[in-house]
Amino acid sequence: MRKIRFYIAMLAAKLSILLLRLAGRNASYLPGKIALKIDAGFIGMLKPPKTVIAVTGTNGKTTVSNLITSILRHNGYHVTNNDLGSNVQAGIATILLQNASFGGNPKNDTAVLEIDERSSLRIYPYLKPNYLVCNNIMRDSLKRNAHTDFISFIINKALPSETTLILNADDLICASLAPNNKNRIYFGLEAQRPETSEAQFVQDIVYCPVCGEALETEYLRYNHIGRMHCSKCGFKSPTPDFTVPEIDRDAGTFTIRQNNTDWVFTLINDNIVNIYNFCGAVALLTQMGLSYEQISDGFAKSKIVKTRYDWFNSGNLHITMQLAKGQNPIACARCYSYVSQYPGENKAIIIMVDDKGDNIKNSESTCWLYDCDYSYLSDPSICQIIFAGPRCKDQYLRALIAGVPADRIKLTDDPKGGADLLDTSRSSNIYVLYDPYLLDEASVVKNKLIAMGTEG
Image (cartoon, rainbow, N blue to C red; front, side, top):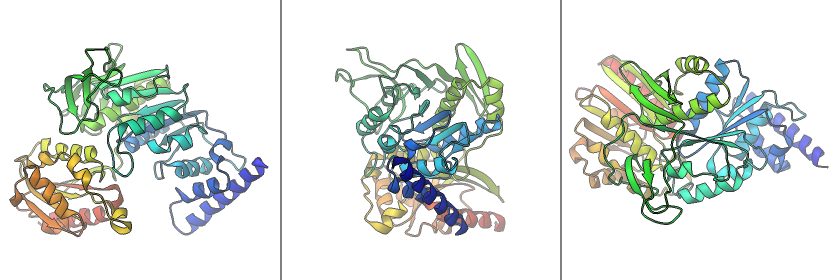
């Protein structure tokens, strides 16, 4: 009876994929939802690929999973990857059945799957990853993954003990995941080590999770990312197996060190958050047996997905398009920091980080704005700030509280209207930060800026 239900689910799901594609739609979620509705254990009935790599964590899942997939494919691996689809249970079911025969056998030997943290309990009992890469665990949207203890509990409860973990040593919460898993590889970042140990605007771990004593800080990069220890019980940040001792932005390279051996890679993006992403990817790929030459060559031919990050020139305008996850206070603060620290003067920034779905279906909570460090926007190098979207006045208030001068700020409730308020005679370096659900609106702003640069 169980197999009959599985085959009915498979038939219905594969038929739905065909119909959705004929309709010109992206079949990334609904087929899996149909399969799971018919057979709740559908994922467990599929024969898994020989190697399953799960990528999870608060920020960087898409970048890391796409990079790993790109490098593996460059080296001849046949990879199943949900790069265009959902990272929850139905999305994982969809991508697996798309890459499986009617009998449930995988077409590819390797799967690289971005998996939402909260979906752990519904995925890992049925699909046991050989490797799990986690770059960070930090506060996220208040309505979803707000509390780090909650997320850690879910992952720890679901993750098989035989899974090899690739963890960020500079994130004490991340590094402490699944303590029963003995196979653990740590990565970290030594380059551009901060000199300060001062508390951050937001910090997700302050007290020792073992004895409750206040943690002592060696240094912090942002949030709780850095090096800490407990002087009472000895709990501390683990020593990384892979570390980044040097970032050479002029040469466009970064160095990773393992066992006193240095490897130099092409620097795809120089944001510190992405340097961690890259180091985690390299740590994983070496565990799979790829050589330095294989990984290095793959890096040289890889790029950040353009919906995540892109830059180009139009006339005298230098335009940077960068994803900034709305309702995620740390991700947005990192984007603000990146703009403020990037070389150049008279920069302009268009910020469109409203949650489109919330604006349509219900009332979006703006509490997350007060967990986000807006003080970066007060940097003197930023002369124009445009908040675009229905919550622009909330953004404006938050910026004023953070000390951003009011005369630098303009508002529009139209998420596509930010470019219309821009004075290009004052700013040639323009940054557009946009929510994942505002890709279409961001494209409109991008085309307006291109036209403005051409006309100017």
